[in-house]
Length: 454
Ligand SMILES: *Cc1c(COP(=O)(O)O)cnc(C)c1O
Image 1 (cartoon, protein in one colour):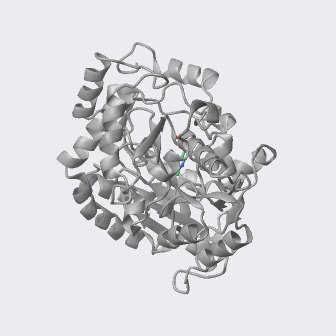
Image 2 (image 1 turned 90 degrees about the vertical axis):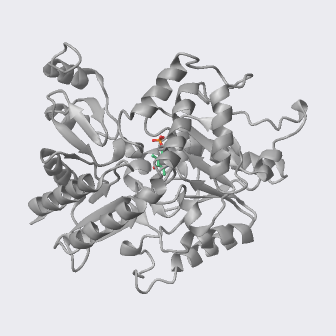
Image 3 (image 1 turned 135 degrees about the vertical axis):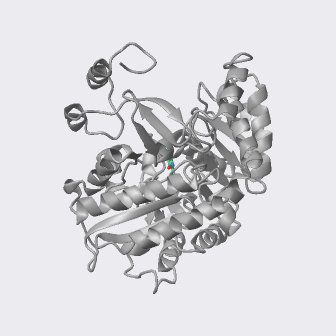
């Protein structure tokens, strides 16, 4: 029996295989395997139909902040649902979306005060890209239609977001449907395209980026970057100072800087936003995943007065931003997001995070010495462990071997849920994870890596 309902686990599994098409999943394999079905959440734990508990090592796809079913958040949601479940922002304003925008304006980098709501990271990035281009059009520069992007970048799965992405296996199929971009080298020290390494690096990739800006002078609308951390590309951490340098280059070449903080926002890197670490203020910033603490879909594209005011004019000038989503500014999601920001303060969450970040580093330092660990990368409470067939040469495991998946399946047997990115094992727990849970997460991962690779 499945806990709260009278439908058996077996029945649920059958219906799932018959009717649910899972994202980023080879369904032939999915249908063959026995799947875990989650029915409950408690703090950092997910509980399945048989009552088995799994530590949520990836914060339910990088969204969870304060734990599952946190009482204060549940109460905020219940309170709001009895007042107003939804009302549109097209032609009307709504209370929770107003208060949230005003509150977010206090914590986003200075000058980023204009919030355009949507409901997921991909749409927040679509909005950013269209906003940047229309801004150029209004400034009399329709020829500035190119976007500078980074190899290995991920900005979501809708076509505009895919166009500015740079992950081969996700994006190549859709090439004929995508717009062209100018792709700069990924700031990926372990596998540097420019043949540098962590020790010899003097940010040659930023020089290469400048070269591309020069060649495309006057043709670029914006540059799109995941600040500090390329997440889905394999938890690739940028060299210190890289983001700052990118900001300077965007200024020098008059290019709008679009920061995709969908994964890094809301404390993940140890600061509220990744841009804070290098005192960078982008022109446009996309936020989503952690915004509503992992409860409900919500996103925003936030910009400055310079961009916003370019859209002002009489109706007949057609400077309106013709873009919008049905559930924009949903009051339930906004109410939870507001309560989540309160909890950040009440729990002193950012300060509490610092010792956990240090503890994670200690674990990673040990794991780095394992014979099949090529590289470990950490940014705040996010980390990636890249497994390699040969540590001397850095030769990767062939992707068909699904080494990352094998490690995660071993971890699951030991009570930890995580999901790999290719050969990289991902650590991305809820920010409230306790010391003992963090220890368990890392001990289990270390054991599972050794079990599979040694
Ligand atoms: C997850 C992610 C997105 C896409 O967000 P969705 O809500 O899945 O559409 C965009 N950018 C980054 C950096 C992400 O990590």
